[in-house]
Length: 227
Image (cartoon, rainbow, N blue to C red; front, side, top):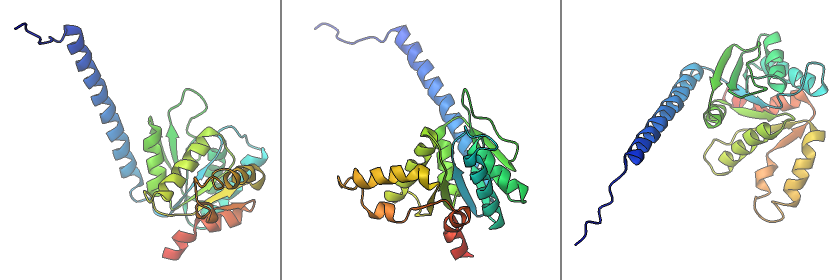
């Protein structure tokens, strides 16, 4: 009988070794990011995450609105956690810092736009989006979403999905900026709810407001209930 054994070529062997080595290095980087996050944030205390665009500038209406939100959160005695970059992230951190609040930035390595802003007490940098989002989910007691693009929407819907599927605690999610967010909510009510892809209860606890004090109060409900 002919020998049907297929001998692996040296190319396949070297390719497999290189692939294994590459994945091993990746796993070490991922583990290191998680460990660094755990060590830095373990004693953070009450915290609210603020999401928003990296593209607004000082003097823009959205920037100044989020800056005042940072002030409102700091005055409630909670840390303000952002993506650590410019725009709305800088505005929230700056507002909180200006009145003595604690600020945390979870920056992400990107080829453009993202760099840590100068208003941070704790600054971490991540290579992987999913590790960064895990830190937001694990350490934030409330979430406030301000006007933003794909990144903001990604963070928002990740949090809502985790809460809907009981993979994360049910914490407040607040939308700041009615004119910006009402179109999204109108679509959610018209398409996914009408199609029964989500339940009306999934939206019922979400607040949309233009009032920074109302937003801060709503985001801190769970924190204050435990005090």
